[in-house]
Amino acid sequence: MSVGQALVTAEEFKQIAIDRDGLVELVRGEVIEMSRPGVKHGGVCAEITRHLGNWAAPKKLGRVIANDAGVQTEHNPDSVRGPDVFFIRMERLPNGGYPDGWLEVPPDLCVEVLSPNDRWSEVVEKISEYFRLGVPEVWVLDPARHEVQVHLNTNGLPRTLRDGDALTSEQLPGFECAVSKLFEGC
Image (cartoon, rainbow, N blue to C red; front, side, top):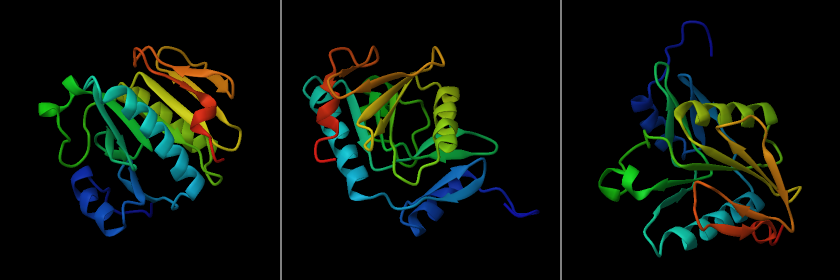
């Protein structure tokens, strides 16, 4: 950010995100350009969204939200991040529906799918922001390695799952998915 440039608020960012096709995030008041993800990234996002949705929908456990929908992670200066996918329990949503604008309460789970141009330091920064907001669990899916890193807000050591392992979560009782299913087609 150049010297003297005003910080952007989350409210001001709404129009910027619309004007730029949503390919931006707000990080401590600064608008950050994001690159358009590739087909592999989109396919993996679709797979995890489908598996989470198939688990959550029949019992109306919560909402699975995808497509980099905004989550306000910080205030003054504001940050609005776009997890690739997130899950939030129904009782934590106003009226059980989708809020207008950004989600301002912590999701129960955030999922990031790595792209070839992602910098690990930026992924770690996002995980830290999610944890400061109160997100209890973050999954990082790596299509190149067919791995899932499970990060818990209770400790700093991620658990790495690979093909042959099952992805489960204490945040999502009864959810189970073979890691290999997430990367079919990769």
